[in-house]
Length: 446
Ligand code: ADP
Figure 1 (cartoon, helix red, strand yellow):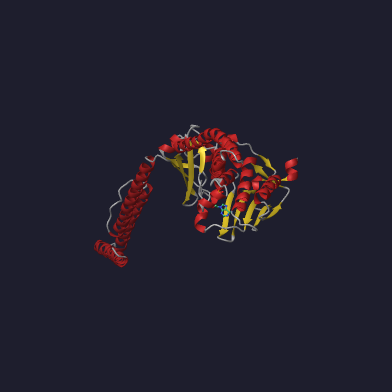
Figure 2: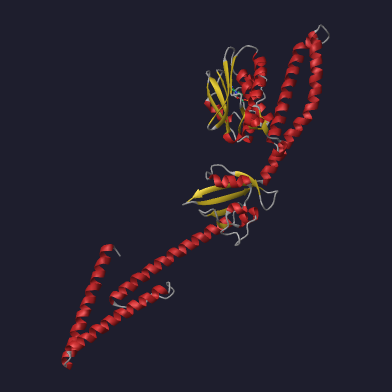
């Protein structure tokens, strides 16, 4: 029914009701007049009319109090309209509720079948609902754990830090509180007004495969190291002999090339081992307060030797700025970036190295005026063995693993790497370390 038609119908009902009242008064008066008590008869008629309305109002109140359990009462006239509207409203409500319940059932059935754990978290950080996988993966128990704070049940410091951070762009990898062998990737998605959805995925198998791959590369590199050392030793000896007028003299060039290639293989193996160590379990690394100015000094000497006076090397270093971190990894970061700058900067180019801090943390920057890198290569530079120009990288003795080592080392320091470059103008690599890792020399000495 349209709004206008509805209003017309309501008006007609009111009209009918007024006519009914007038008819009742007239009838009461007529009967009263015949009996000789017209006023009393009208009074009785109006009392009966009011009682009927009161009775209908009582039915309405009773129906309201029954919370819609009772059928909507039936009546005629104005009350018929009231009860009819309530009935239609009740039917609509009932249908909406059924639809909503069906939707919730469907949602719960589909999420219950998910292999990933799903937890609905309310604005207070408490568990509102979870599926079977969440119970299995995270050791939750229903219904006891409903309404419990998530961080009281998942107590891993990494997860607590992630949960309380409030910004959930990334995910966090933790061991399951139920089973230490289960490795879970947990991601939180915020929705509605303060609600959150926690998704937990079992990545133990992926982790295991990753470990097997890492161990394989580390073991293969380790096994190759000894035979290669022997081969290199003999090749160096033969290359030396070929330099003198001995029977090996005609082999001088090939022997030198073989010796160079063997050294390159050696460097690749060393870098692969370094990468495997950096990617290895955290327990194998030892954190310390690293004297970054001292490391930069040592690498400056090596860089001067490598450059052999062909470049201008500028170092700007805050001598009191130390860093809480892993010394071997930080040394790799500095040496890879500085040596790369030398390798990829033509003669008489300038290389600026800066170690400084500000309110955001500490920053290690290497800027060169070298060959630069096209923008399309930049996102891929930290991939293993990715080179812009494989020939040039080989010429400079590169292994293609340097920036990959830098990336992993920075990750262990919660740091990040920025690369800005323009072909034929130069490149700037900036490493940023968080404030929490910054130490000042005096504080470090005490
Ligand atoms: P490589 O051992 O080949 O230098 P890296 O992982 O250190 O391997 O670097 C990857 C690639 O990034 C290099 O092959 C080179 O193309 C490019 N690159 C790295 N540093 C610079 C730089 N300072 N200037 C120009 N290109 C660079």
